[in-house]
Structure formats: structure tokens, C-alpha cells
Amino acid sequence: MRSATATGPGGRIDSLLDTPIVGMLPWILFSVLAGPGRFELAVGLALAAAVLILVATRVVNRGSSVKILEVADVVFFAVMAVIGAFASAGTYEWLETYANEVSNIALVLIAFGSMAVGVPFTIQYARERVDREHWGSPHFLRANYVITGVWACAFLVAALAGAYGDAVLHNPDNVWTNWIIQVAAIVVAARFTEWYPRVVASRASSGKPGPPVRSMLIPLVGLLIPIGVVVLIFDAAASWFGVALIITGVLLARAIGKDTEMTHDARRHRRGRLK
Image 1 (cartoon, rainbow, N blue to C red):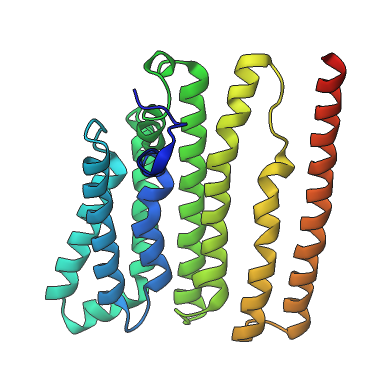
Image 2: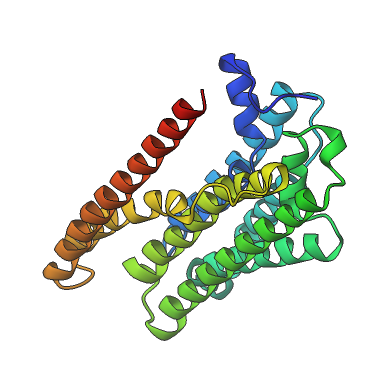
């Protein structure tokens, strides 16, 4: 069994490929690029990324299992490419507008479907990173159901945001509905994927709560800064609102960072006293 702490370039690449976030990359790429006049580019790059990830995983780690998400990546974007190639003008125009929502809904179905059949898609990645003896652990199983559920909710938020921008605002390139909200949902799910397993492991081994919620929030607070910059660049809201987001992000990041540093210092002090 490969260790999650493998070192060296090969080990780092191996460990990187064993995360569900990598399996999401084609969908994230498609979500960012899809829009009027960009359907072929978005589908082409997403399909290329899906094939590359599938091949790279097999080459880097030949003992790795084929993942539900990896297969879904290739199949979905291959089908979308074929449909786009033979679609009528009206269908193609519809795809350019709503393909992003279709992809997000497909991910929602994949996530909930994998949970329904008892194999939440994140568990296949998690099994590559832990010893086989833990695979049947209730903590391990529950953690993957929770993480997969969080991803499903993130995809649903992205689908609803995109649908609102396309169907209600009639603006597929709306900065908020097409990019900011969708990217924020994905970032939250990705951060939760890193944070929650450590919480579960800590509770299972020592009964302690594990990393505090604020440790998960630090990168999310930092997201306020680039959002504020995007607001200013694309005039997505009043200038004062963009400036307020940037200032709030900086202040909150500093406050949480200082609090986390004080917590680490307190822990080091307690360990020093025990010695």
C-alpha cells in the first residue's frame, strides 16, 4: 500500500493524483471556460485534461484502481464533444448557454449516485492513502459520505448560480453567477476535503476535536481579496464594495492568523512543560 507521506518527486505526484480534487480539474476547467463562443474550447480542453489524468494515474501508479470520477470525466466530455460536433445551430446555441449547468448537474448526480450505491466517489481516492485495515472503519466510511455530500452541495450551488445567471439575468458571462459563486463553492469543498479527515482522525485516535474550524476558514477568508479585485476590474459592483472586500479579507486573515499562531504557541508551551 502506498503511503500518503511518500517523499520525492514521484511520491509527491503519486499523492497528488490520489485526491478527488484532481478528478475535478476537467470540470473546473470547463466551468471556468464554458460560455457563448467558447463551448468547443471548453469541451476540448476538459476532455484532454480528463484523458491526461486517467493516463497519468495509470502510468505513475499502475496499482491504482480506476476511479468512478475519472471514467465519468472522460465519458461526459467525450459525449459533449460528439453532441457539439453534430448539433444543429439551435442545439449548439443552447449548449453554449447551459452546458455549464449541465456539467454541474451531472456532477451532482454522480456524487449522490455514488453515495446511493454505497461507494461515495471520494472513498476510492481515500483508500489509496490509508491502510486496508481502515477501509471498513465507521469513521472512514462516514467521513467519505460527508465529504462526497459536501462536494454534491457545492456542485448544486454552482448549477443554481449558473442557471440564475443564464435563465433569469440572461447574462452567461455574469461575474458573480458564472465565476465568483461557482469558484467559491468549489474552494469551500476542496478546503473541507483537506480539513475534515484530520478532524475525524483526531476524534477517533484521541477523542479530541482536532483542527478548529478557523483553520479551514483561513484560505476562504483570503478568497475575499481576489474577489474584491475581480469586482473592481470587471465593475461587477460598486467600487466601494470591492475595496471593502479586500480590506475585510486582509483584516480577517491577519486576525485568524494571529489567533492560530497563539494557539500553536500555547500547544508548544504545554508540550515543553510536559517534557
